[in-house]
Image 1: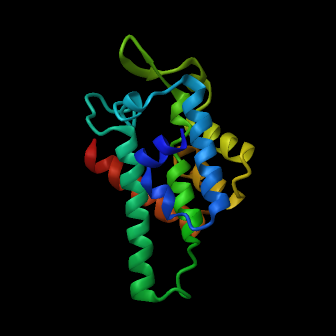
Image 2 (image 1 turned 45 degrees about the vertical axis):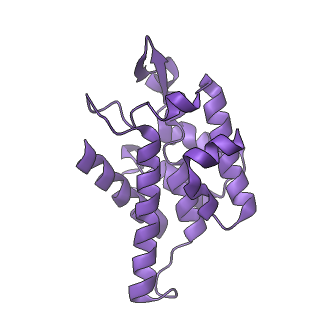
Length: 177
């Protein structure tokens, strides 16, 4: 399973902290196993059910947002210097990789169509994502990114990593819908 996850989400290897990287992989493994998602389904399901006729797959969205986060961090370091930018890159990447992992619990395929599951009608992906992260010992700073990236996090004080992720996520969402 790890090989499949790294094939689909090679950005996980950008996490320098091996323990954190392995915990991120473990979260993905559990979320995939929750519904028995296959590689074929993972690359086919849409990244949101909020927009009809969406052609951007879930995995592509996760990867695009993560890469935008990395690019933003690179620019901030290049222009402002590493000491002026309070970003923990490993936390940023881990948060980007895990912010939407709960969608694998929120969604299911019925008659070949992606729909909100019964579970998902009660528990949206930021909550299930934080639960998975907590279960696997992910640092609270990363759980903060997962928790605050969507409407459920409105009004919370955001960390630097959460600010970067939130904007990258909505850039991808607003431009590809």
